[in-house]
Image (cartoon, rainbow, N blue to C red; front, side, top):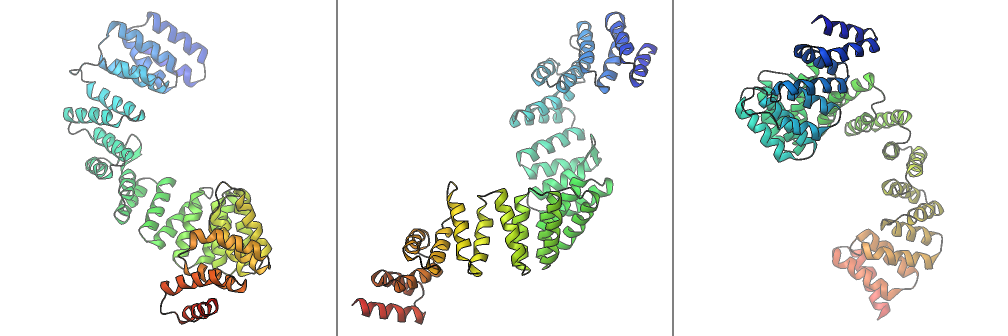
Length: 421
């Protein structure tokens, strides 16, 4: 096939114009063998339209040839013409040697369309024809994983691993580990991640290993893998929060905090990193830094309720009542306010001696915290200070019923009852 080799050589040397002239000659005047071989080569070099024309020309001579129909379908898939590919594959006769391959391709196409049952039927039919073909087992494993049927997926991957550890460039141990982990058996997945990394060091596998170790409670192993990943790719953003969590679980919040600050340098618009950094800063007694982190998180997302709540808790502790109200007002601008902010506002207004606003905030909060003892205590004593004794009787009556053994509640309730008479 000297003419085909010449065209390939021209392509490799960047002589595209000469190569295309040679292609045109083979398309119009070459032998069918030349067309077939050139078509296969052109697919590899990305000349898909040209390859398609060659395969379509061949089908004029061999309209039912399964091998050519499969090649044409694969080319159409590469061109993004999935519907046309399905039509070509459906033409292949069940007795054709390429029929099982066509079923696998069809299954993949139907899976892409979300037609999982049709895809499964195609693969099971192919499996019945070629029971020992591990590529089909692997395809079934991929399908079941996508459907969330992890038990079935694991069984398929197990069959593949009896003979193969890689299919189409995909690490089967890694797929097995991911399926086991997704099914919740985190500890059982770890040996497969080990095997996967022995075959090939790949950063996503390394991350999944670390994350699964963290889920399984192996914090030390998680730290080891995340640090290894950080060394390989410091811009793998997801590692930082998980590595920090592993350190926190090992009661080393300081290291966790430093890791989060490092992550922020790479991912400066990640509100969750700032929020988590704020929490760990509080854990390590860095109140000023914690406030900075929470405010940065809120600058990125003014409706980040978790950050606002934790910041307000800090501000209440520091008795910075005006700052508490500033956060409350910011959260009131959102679509829906977390009820805890009513309680925060009540405490702030009370301490700023803005009693009517405090009463209004307490009443708003009461709708949500009428069974919460700490709130009822705050509200009850506020009502006493404001001379609202009848209402205070109701609140302390609830407290007595909630905790009959509490002598303080009993005494206050009794005095109030006597005063109200």
